[in-house]
Length: 445
Image (cartoon, rainbow, N blue to C red; front, side):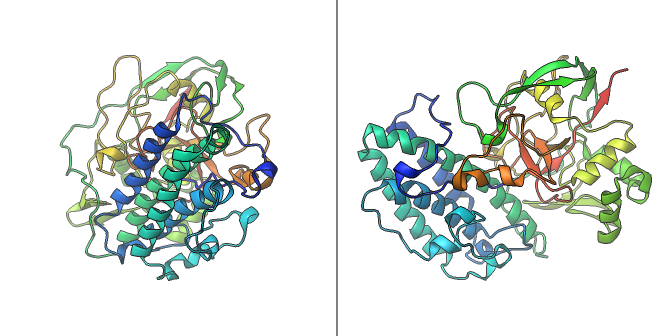
């Protein structure tokens, strides 16, 4: 999941105006303290069973060690909440300002991303002490600040909370990628074995085109890339599949030569397949016993009823072409999702693997939220009227609005309560270490 939410620190009087995601919430310091503690504790719970060596793994430049995620989310609160707003706050270690800055040029230098695993010091225990130091200072600030300071820091803390939830998902996906190189197949989740359920037949549900409104609306937190809310014209009626594509259907694609037929693929996608020898989703392998998938609970046989995951955009697009369908646009997806409750298989189930969708009713789709992020056909760009704020907050989302594609819905590694119909995730087309899948769409007429 994309890493966002960093804000320029300095004299509070000179700070740029920031969105007030918490302003619509009827929240007080005690409530915010409880929410902050819950999320910070959830991060530590993810590493309880990890050895220090596990926490320093970095298997490719795009992933980060678990220890670094723990430190970086702490660095956010220290840099953007405590340093400018907590009188007399003493930094835990000034050197951490460079070590745990991600990519925010507006707040100073960064340690090179591909070399994060070389930071054997501070060790995992020291990172724990750093987190406790910052947590105590945050608790004290919230307990003793006046109304004016609380109004300034509450949106920053809410932003930091959501930022940390993003990193909780990244910790899981990054660990899975790192564990995949270990022949011992380390385990972290509680993914059950094959469900034994029969794959549900796919059903396409019709939806009217015309003018729809998308983007964040009403009370509650949102990121800036979800705004402003605006109208979009859908030129024709469309159908959306009632569930994500499952592993059984994807096995048919493979058996039919899907990875050897260039006419199914975008030019860049076909070059990616050929250059990397791609012949199946990430973490799939074939043996004499058949296809297996590596999960965070170890390897097991493919379950045909489960949503297929760890697909790149290129694979999702090629499968849609093979199916005689297409990927939905993000406005189509959101116009449907906005009418559905946000419920599904999220990280609190501790399975960290997609599950077989429950049968849905006659009207609504299944598994729109949770299980797998769903690739759309929409390039990640600004909504009409979007403007980046001044200062480092302008690096929040805006500078990444090129060459990436939008995914919707959340996954089995997403913290519960973190996503909503307007939530926009985004990755580069070849990326597939996230729990990314596909739901098909078709034009009517």
